[in-house]
Length: 473
Ligand code: LRH
Image (cartoon, rainbow, N blue to C red):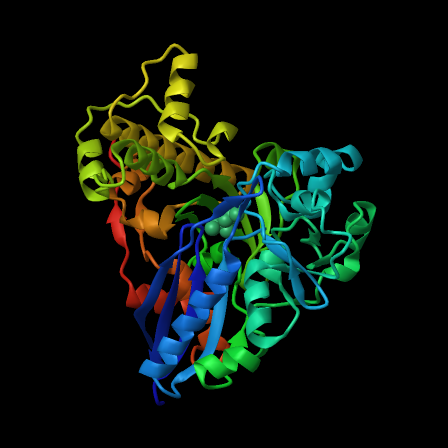
């Protein structure tokens, strides 16, 4: 068969990229086309995403793709971080979408919990409590009453590209308004909370054609390419690309967050799962992503931002390679801190907050960037290990290996520490799992890949050999 190419738009909380995937004779080749920063903007007392700039970057990436590969691109798929949304009325965006790290969500939690306590909510939506789940954001959104449509970020961008109004299921599963048993909106819950079900778009599964580039988008790209719904929740796409065709694996999708858990056939609603704050999010092909949000490399990137600010813009201390090498030479054992403490959620001076965690307990706090970095890495690894073992226990599923995918797979110190602290081998990579999962689901929709998750994962395992870390005593 002639080679065919799809374009993955993958938007993370700190940067976005457009990556091409070319299928030929059952193998996959990737090409990075564009990478751009995704910098939130603070104004009017709120923290917002610059979605218009993101859309511009997407269009620009697709235009480059068409120019460099005229007529070759068969489809486009978009994934991004979860939970955040834009509200529309009569097709017009109302306000600028909020960032999930904005502080306003506390009020929404109070409002929702006044009607549905944490137990009742979990029984309905099976979601871990995160103060920024869409349901809490909507409950405190002043524009809710004016809106006729709510679109999650990837659906919003797909809407601007095609005119279609849909909600892709994996991402919809992070809103708190979806019933994981039926895969349908919980209209009763929405109505009771004053969220009109009419603003929730029709649900579609990953692999469905959303539409074709129309209007201005078709004009700038120069052709009416298909837009295909992928696992539009970035974590759902990442889990597609785990290079393991078996079942006894746990995963850590490690970027800004560390999403740590298992892939299951059915959701787990037990009290134990709720208390351990495990979520039942929707995966591609109807799977359940039974996982917990561990704070992730946000702790490190936000610390680096603090050190950079202190050093002044001229002298950046952010040579990450060097910092990690120094962190590796900090003598062990390192006292670990609780990375999931809510104080680390909002942007700000992370080193000061981490130091506070130690001094409150009368423990010596890290002092140098290398010591902080080492404490962050060992503490993340401990949380990854604990979470994997807890997930296995609660879901009554054996785990024999941990796959680390995403940016964190490049971090050797982190991968080794995760193996050491869990007593399980860690298989690291691919780094671009999210984009690969996006590409595979498009490839399957276009008939370029056959089969289910095992076949797609087999293809990943052949194209990207993971690095193995054995646990040390
Ligand atoms: C990771 C992620 C995660 C969500 C968070 C909002 O990028 O999508 O799965 O919980 O962002």
